[in-house]
Length: 309
Image (cartoon, rainbow, N blue to C red; front, side, top):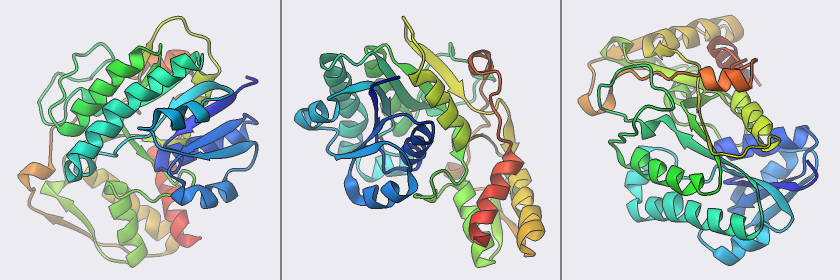
């Protein structure tokens, strides 16, 4: 690939990891988005990276960022239901209108390769459905985040996009952003040497995928020629109970840090739990026989080592 790859949301958890990974592969990258973390990212991402601060909702800003670009990786988004609920108008503008503007400007710039990062929340979050969920399963989003991301997928499909429905992404990534999901809470508990907290016996199961595997899939797709839109579930194909994850953090903290961390369980809160969800990943494995490479245990060890370091 001779042209530059534009990565939107480059200062975020996933975006920064993708920028660093593509640069390590000796690809030319343009980091686009708010510049609050660009100084840090420039120290983390070695290689041919240029930084283009700009607004996703500004067509002129996008047009300038797309100059000389051969492929787009669209990661810019509000991250999850809580963030969307905190600023509903902003979430709608960014996730739906922002994707629409990016698609339009990419087409005007002649960009032929477009990778759009979505979520398996487009299938549903709270509904009990037949599992596993495949790429042909009906989209029945039942929260704000999933609904907006489903609309964004429709916009991205107009750009012949490769749409990646990510499950719960974990791992240190670029190190620029520490997540505040269940992995982040467990890591913080180990760091502070306070109890790891679970609810309802930790029976709820969640599907995870390592950030490094996401980056490798993205790198493979920006290099591939396609004549039709592509939809891929990007997960592990299995769900892990929260109790099992807590025990993994507990044993890994003891192994690496010599810390004995207690696990404390409390009664489940109704709006904090939802049915287990798991996806099929056969399509991703057909394209990338190595996928997924990083195990849950490997990723947790990496997270614990960020405390040690």
